[in-house]
Amino acid sequence: MTYTQAAILGIVQGLAEFLPISSSGHLALLQYFFGVESDSVLLFTVMMHVGTLVSVFIIYWKDIVELIMELCYTIKDLCTGKGLRINSSPTRRMGFMIIVATIPTALIGLLFEDFFESLYASIISIAIGLLFTGTILLVAEKMGKSDKGPMEMKWRHAVFIGCMQGIAICPGVSRSGSTLFGGLIAGLERNFAVKFAFLISIPSILGSVILEVPDAFAEGTDASMIGPIIVGVVLSALSGIFAIKAMIKVVSNKRLVGFTIYVWLVAVAVLGYSLLAA
Image (cartoon, rainbow, N blue to C red; front, side, top):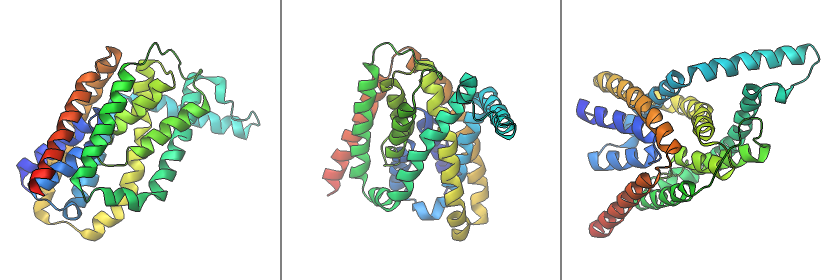
């Protein structure tokens, strides 16, 4: 892999992870056209996920610190016999909602792992995923007033959003787009829906990294890949920061339709290429 390819993949990873256009779909397409075998750059892919994690931690560090503090307070309450006291604060309730949302995502990922991996063998499946992403974004754009915060959010809302995140394991289906769709369908206030979508990406991305690290190191990597990996990680983190900030503004201003048009155009282009190459 060249430095140029690493830079492009890193930027695309950061942008597409948080903008609702599917990082998995875009990276798979770029690797296909670059002629890069996914197995040969597994460590590179894992490290780029680390880069996007850094983006979330930088943007939402205050919320993350508050969630960690609430976890400590929860443990203290349990030890002193006060119980979980889930509704004692918006931050604590949000923390429990993040845990609940993560459970269906993990179950879907583990139960259908082989199925999801098989979808990456065809760029047609990526196109279908992009069409699905565009459709749910269009629906999300049409949602009316949403005003639910952490205290008004129900358990079923968290489960539904977690299921949407699980579906996003499919190539071409945007994780941020799916979770945002789930949040808006649940009636969450738009800024909170964005925050929740990005915060639940932490256990999802972290879990993916943990599962892939053993295989990545088992595959090994050439010393010449160290430079491209560093470039990819740095650029994925920087572009991720930009994408998160942009996404907050886009959702607040109800301007998701542009992403719908974009992913549909990419899907049509991929389908057209598949037909011509057949």
